[in-house]
Image 1 (cartoon, rainbow, N blue to C red):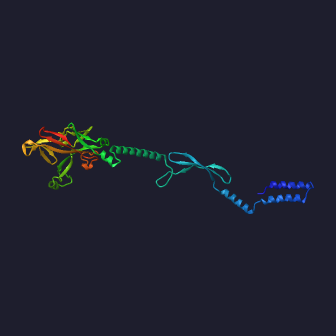
Image 2 (cartoon, helix red, strand yellow):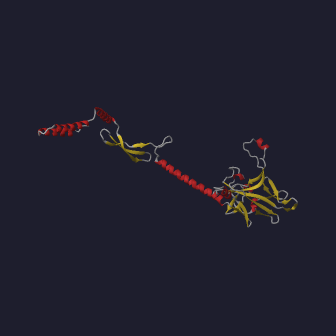
Image 3 (cartoon, helix red, strand yellow):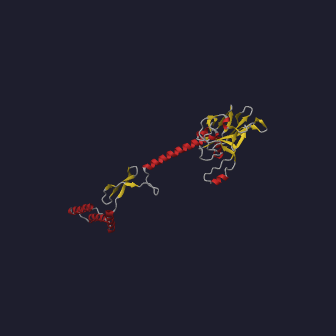
Length: 332
């Protein structure tokens, strides 16, 4: 653009020079050169066309974003506050808040307040579970094979005639309970309720089994400190809740007298006589083997329990009948 104010000043200067009758080729040339220099700064038509195109484009241009910041928020949405400027007029304005969509399983987005609450709750639950696992692991000694071996090993000991179980504190603290086993030969009655009458008549018994058999149920044995106590229920009711408890070894043997006057006791499918077969006038020494192991609580009728269910080792002990004193005592 030409500075017309400067041209006006030069024309006034030329007039003043003429009025003073001091015009000369040098002065006229100087003034005209200055006018030429100013005219040289004028844009070409091409430049003017470009400017006109910009002018027309700015009339229809969308406002430009000039500022973006965190706006108000609620529990479910995040908003951005924005300002814009009209590129043609220069007027500024606040835009409608921009909403960030919530995150879904299909796309990324903003997290809702409830999702943060749920996430924090999940983190607390996981932390609590980890603490419980650490507690259980520490109780059971989980972590190394050596610790696991040590924590699951229990043993029986006879102290002043009473049976003690050692090494079971961590197991009982972790919620495991003791079970009583004995070495027997068993043959349970065949009681398949889905079998026909003919099948039940043809097969009165299941296959014979020999080895460790569960004696009673979860209600047969308990620990009083380290002392082992046995249910005083009749053996026909040994699987039900105990009516009383005894630390006497004789509790494990149920005596009866047969038709010949011999004193006997049941052991699995066998009936064992106290009478010495070599001398019917005397009684014989008898040794019976039992074992105690720990497992999770399994209530009567729920599932068959074998030593394979145990978390611990099987701590064995024996009870011995002395014909001299006619008493049962513990031994290991």
